[in-house]
Amino acid sequence: MNTIQNGCTWPGNDELMLRYHDEEWGVPVHDDQKIFEFLVLDAFQAGLSWKTILHKRENFRKAFAGFDVNKVSKFKEEKVEELMQDAGIIRNRLKIKATITNAQKFLDVQKEFGSFDNYIWQFVGYKSLMNHWEVSNQIPANTTESDAMSKDLQSRGFKFVGSTICYAFMQAAGMVNDHVVGCSWHCKCLEV
Image (tube, rainbow, N blue to C red; front, side, top):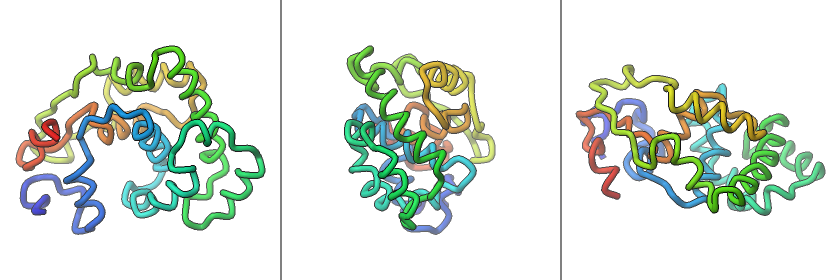
């Protein structure tokens, strides 16, 4: 794992961040449960670092029923209060409630499109967008695609889906490949 030497510097020397970079970031995801997981985690990331979220990922998985969208959609106020006491996650009432709302809206989209995957990938023409950044600081915080995704998700009642959050989701789900050209994963992640 020589990520830093190969170009992508954002994982730093953190082992979990390096593993995430090498095994997940930029790899196309088409499984609805995994897509929901990234939607949840990226919403909780708003205003925080990805490192913070990644290090709490297993706690989020336990707290949100293994990211089972059907179960999360049925969480009631008692569950919100329970989660507000869970020091293993980010205890933000608005984000917790948004996760429940988003689960309900996610199910609506699945009914309409057959899968959330069918819906979400339309924003990139059903194929990963391959960027060719030389250095990490060239990577944008949002794009016209993430703007369109954000606007559509918001019109459907989703919460914590601003364009920057949507772009982070697109990176996580492999809808966009932002590995810099010097990174060994620049092309490899599309082959996984």
